[in-house]
Length: 334
Image (cartoon, rainbow, N blue to C red; front, side, top):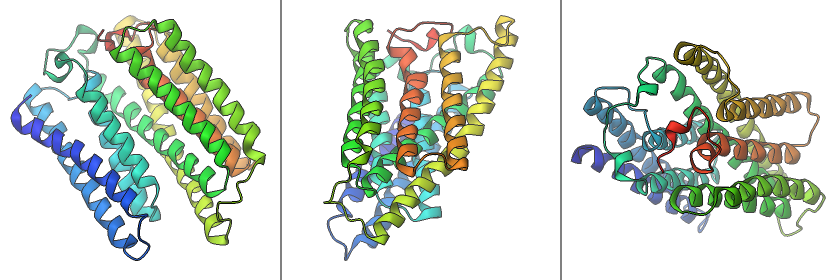
């Protein structure tokens, strides 16, 4: 990695952290909130541009498409998260989603910075990745994952605006527990069986408890028409994110099958990561059906979007760190 590329990547990482704090600070003063929000968007835009140039520079230095290992995929994920938020901010004028999006991007930068140096270095591709299918198959998947994360974060904000604080707490606790399992699986020697139990157990218990707690509306949360309108907006933002991510995931699964047939002679082998991608696809197909038919309330759909976020997290990072194995285990570095 050249010094120029490192400087650009660090600039993007620092911009995501700075935009997080500026977004948080925007809540301190209603008088200067609009100015502060514009500043936060500008800071994130600087990071997005810097990361775009960093990814292009890495591709030029590597003389290949810059998406071949976990570190590079994290850069793409952060790029898609930041770009996705900037698009949504322009379309909806959203406020609170900014600090959550920048927090996710900053977390991915931090996660990537802790990876072994072998992940940061530009190295020859492993034989399984030497194919033109890589740049066709992988980018749509990474971008879809980022959009699904934004949808899940919008679901959290919908629960907040609707006064479902108890359900929100269960959802946040579940995401923290699942993310902790991923982190421990990546950087520690904890038995992967316990980490699998932590991830799967929290992902089942948390959403179930959140559904049960939906009947409780916290009276401390403003339930004025403006607040209800904000809740509806975040419900619409989540649906917009899924509407973008779902076709991209579909493209990724189809091209993955074509690549698998080219490389292994079979379109589908029920590999764990393939199967999990299919489960994630089905979960968002169900979300879209329920949203269009209005068979669930916006608050229940928000929990469904959080479940989708957990499935996305497992599909994207879980199979590298939780020891599930399979044909995609070349992404594991420990």
